[in-house]
Amino acid sequence: MGRKPDAATKFGGGGGGGSAASPRPARRASPSPVFLGTALFVLGFVSLFTGHVVTDADWSRIRSRWRSKQFRNNEPIDIWKSKYSSLYHECSERSTDFRSAVPENSSTGYLLIATSGGLNQQRIGITDAVVVAWILNATLVVPQLDHHSFWKDESEFSDIFDVDWFISYLSRDVSIVKRIPYEVMMSMDKLPWTMRAPRKSMPDFYTSEVLPILMRRRVLQLTKFDYRLTSELDEDLQKLRCRVNYHALRFTNSIQAMGQKLVRKLRLMSSRYVAIHLRFEPDMLAFSGCYYGGGEKERKELGEIRKRWDTLPELSAEEERSRGKCPLTPHEVGLMLRALGFGNDTYLYVASGEIYGGEETLKPLKELFPNFYTKEMLAVEDLEPFLPFSSRLAAIDFIVCDESDVFVTNNNGNMAKVLAGRRRYMGHKRTIRPNAKKLNVLFQRHNEMGWDMFSRKVKKVQRGLMGEPDDIRPRRYDFHEFPSSCICLRKPENTSVTT
Image 1 (cartoon, rainbow, N blue to C red):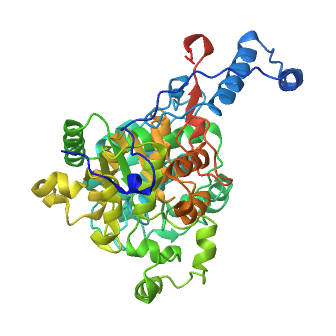
Image 2: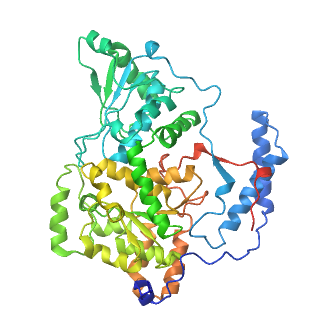
């Protein structure tokens, strides 16, 4: 169909095509003598204590990584794909000295896990449950999903994940059963002991506080199991996390088939597409404490929703926005993408729940990107069996977002973190995390500058947040978002970088 003027064009700049301009050759920076001397000294110093001799390969690897990073800081960004992704590969294999699963009949007991939250929050809990079972030498009972939170989804583990694959894939690491054996239940004179671990507990907490109870009672349940294990584990346990999250947790055939069907429909319309996880639901905005210009009506509506959480502090909407804590609006997400170089012929897949403000809120994004699709638009009647189950719908969105060429989020929620980590692990597929704090300043001033200047500034503030292997990590980064222990650098002799 014919291309109509859009918001970006009206703003003061041409829309451009669907891809960024071809990167121009740049002069490669040479390592400074100070840097090279310091790095060599450190390696030599370490070798005195470890007995490791610094080889030519070690030195070449450090020098090439430093050079590539210097070069990357000055080159245009390909908005569709990182040219450096081939330098890295997934590496979550168990080490030869990693303890194998303890057989069920000689384990310390049966560990019951009650997860909490939405699909991806529960996914994090399931991942950590396997690690905790390994730490305790326990037999893990297939985790129980949350049926009582905001989403009110009655789905069981086997309704969303392939439970037989889950048990089989992890059999070398942890013994997992679908239910506690009948004879064990009959032999118990008391109900299973129930407790809740503190958030981000260290392994020592589980061995000192949980293990004695498990061994005494034989069956133990941990409740509200989300983020109950620290991100700071040793490398072998981090790799176990990756084996669970990226390999063992496979969706059921029906969910997988539905997700892939939507991907095929998108691929028939365009060879590549951008997926946006657009968290702009009323509960999300209420929880954030942010304000979006809707006047007294918005303040009253979101204020009422916010009363659901008794412990939330009073927040200043202006301060939260200046700190970059407010989710970007659909319009702001669209402006960011157009400024980065995505043309209005780009196909968007938008994963979201109920958008606050409905079609009126989405209108500016649709004007910027007319090729706008959701699962409801693509699936129609095929989606009906999944409609009563929010977690299954979220799983379908997860698949389509994971398969996208570019994944974008306007928030730092669980789905955003889990998908960002998975896409890094699976080849550093382009993932855009908005620099909300700095973008907020640009959005406030965007009417005061031309489109070209706005675009240049957006590209500048987003550098380091585009899914490159050496992206900026938040000060308190989550392993689920940056699974660094499971991503390895390829040997220099097997890799060449064209510049």
